[in-house]
Amino acid sequence: VQLQASGGGVVQAGGSLRLSCAASGRPSSSFTMGWFRQAPGKEREFVAATRWSGGSAAYADSVKGRFSISRDNAKNTMYLQMNSLKPEDTAGYYCAAAPRGLILIMLSRSSEYDYWGQGTLVTVSS
Image 1 (tube, rainbow, N blue to C red):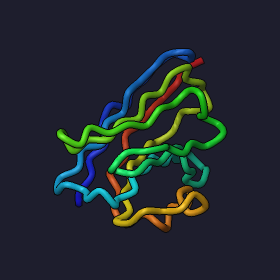
Image 2: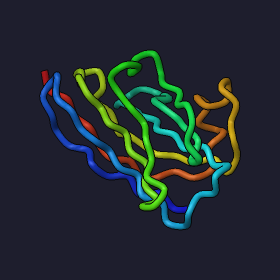
Image 3: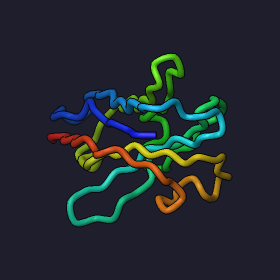
Image 4: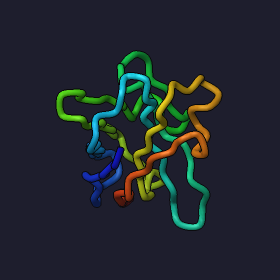
């Protein structure tokens, strides 16, 4: 599976962006799909995750209620809708996939994901 993230850009605080992650090679229903981000000088952190087959999603506390993860199986694409953006959301955003279902405690661990996209930069100005 190869992943390609897109949709980043510059937006003012309070604005919205939708990131896309296109998968070449259809992920199986057992895959776990996730979004991570990394700000300059900081470690990569978990943002959100969901099963490729659907169902409930998990979010970092910092984005809960503002971000929403979804996927379109027909298009082999995962999305991250980001609303009410804040300057602290500024980071490179990376999509990732694990070829298995991850339990809740494992979702936020980047080491559990085998496939990564190249990242797309989001800049939120104040």
